[in-house]
Image (tube, rainbow, N blue to C red; front, side, top):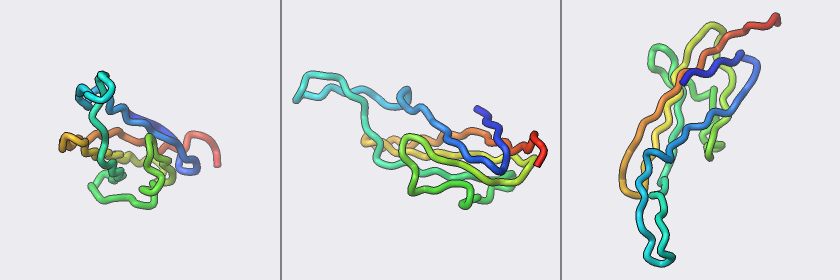
Length: 104
């Protein structure tokens, strides 16, 4: 997926992980549940692969994360790494394009 915003705003990006999680049977309530997440780590990388820590707040990572800043006419890669209770590790990415399309 690709998201476009300007450098003066911030936004939230959601990664759907439901299709990555396996279902399992819970004996205590006779229901099928999904495996759970142990952790989620977010990073934003520039075109050279360097982390852009000022563009996100790891402490605000919940179901989504606020992104903002960057430089005009620059593409960034948002990377989400999750680990599940079944010890599966997944890496999901999205492109964030910074474009100042309105006059300053």
